[in-house]
Image 1 (cartoon, rainbow, N blue to C red):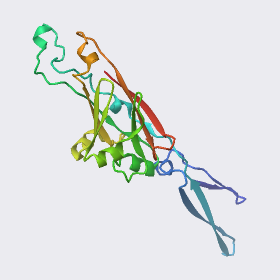
Image 2 (spheres, one colour; image 1 turned 90 degrees about the vertical axis):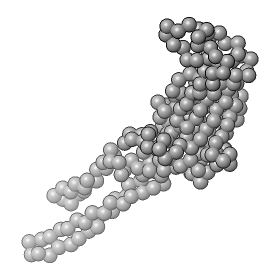
Image 3 (tube, rainbow, N blue to C red; image 1 turned 60 degrees about the vertical axis):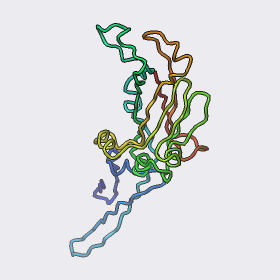
Image 4 (tube, rainbow, N blue to C red; image 1 turned 45 degrees about the horizontal axis):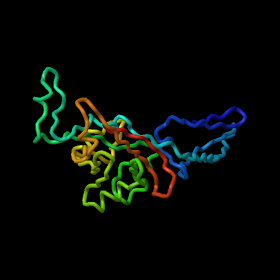
Length: 231
């Protein structure tokens, strides 16, 4: 708002909590124009234009860690999820399919142009998501899914991760006023041929980790990073 005293001195106070103000990214500006009119007792008047330029800043990108966390532990082939009151022998079946763990990758940014990029899973996006597993290099998820006909597979120490772009129905499921549309879904499946997986005893567990980051390209410093532990 613009305040003017009796001597003609004015002060502009920025509403920093405004969504319009916060949506301005680094390098973006918005100009507010005010017209100040002065008039004397004889009816003569003058008009002065006051332009105030608001400059945007680069606000932080934040991952939705609730989405990122896997919905449950992955279970190897041949083992049913533990059921209270049911014997261990009754829960083991050689033909039982493995149980996969799933999660969703999405980040938010109050800067409008960055948020648009974070919701774009294509290679044309200004910001890409990268996945790094232990001992590996960063893999561009946007590029991998587009060149991989809709999915990207990354092997971990004890299983595999498969990444896909969310369908329109899945986007609706996760979208709300506080959480804009996420970009990708991942599925983790244990490798039943892995010796360490096969040696697991009842209620035993192994862990694989991966790091998800957001950056303009593979050579750039990530603007956000988060670690995910898979069990």
